[in-house]
Length: 272
Image 1 (spheres, rainbow, N blue to C red):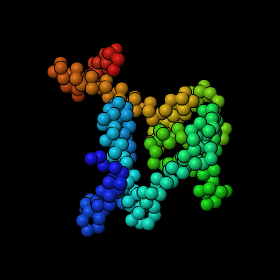
Image 2 (cartoon, helix red, strand yellow; image 1 turned 90 degrees about the horizontal axis):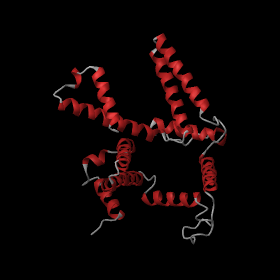
Image 3 (tube, rainbow, N blue to C red; image 1 turned 180 degrees about the vertical axis):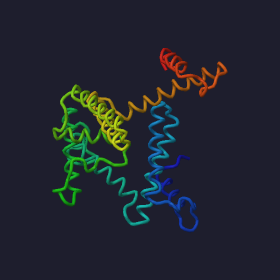
């Protein structure tokens, strides 16, 4: 027997049963499970990065359970339920894909309308802009940046903020000025360091990182993915150094930096 979504929804109800449910689950609320949701999303990303597709199926299940959890909490507080979640996303995607569902009907026959990729992207952004306007209680305060989630990883959020501003023409047309901006921000970091002002150093480092993300965007590189790959590369090379030292009966802490640098270069030569 294969369990279906209705079984998962029932399981969630049982876990939250006030008399016979799980004590831990009964203590949770919207705010307390956010950290778990983010963790599960990262574990999905890790499984994809590792191309561990059997593991990915399980991680997607964990992430789906988070959505089910929020839906149960919403139902208990008479805010929304699972049916509203599913209905809302289905309606939104039909609305945002008029090239697939030209009459707004989910059962529209395939091939009724064709658009080029750039037309699809433009239409998508137009529809999202209309949705933001509809959600705004005070349109005069509406900002292009309103729906960029604050909970996103900082690199991803920086890239989204820049992309959103770029649509309004607030952007450089090429990468060269961004490189100059990075050099400018690096000089400001040096100046803050020379002044011994730690708060200023932190602020200038933020500006430098933001400029580097901007360069990645102009080069059509996803900053979050690039840094994850950089992290993985560092980890592979560092583990190589550790293993090589162990094989030589040496200790990492007692090895001088010059020797460590040589092992680092050896790891690079091996393609790690």
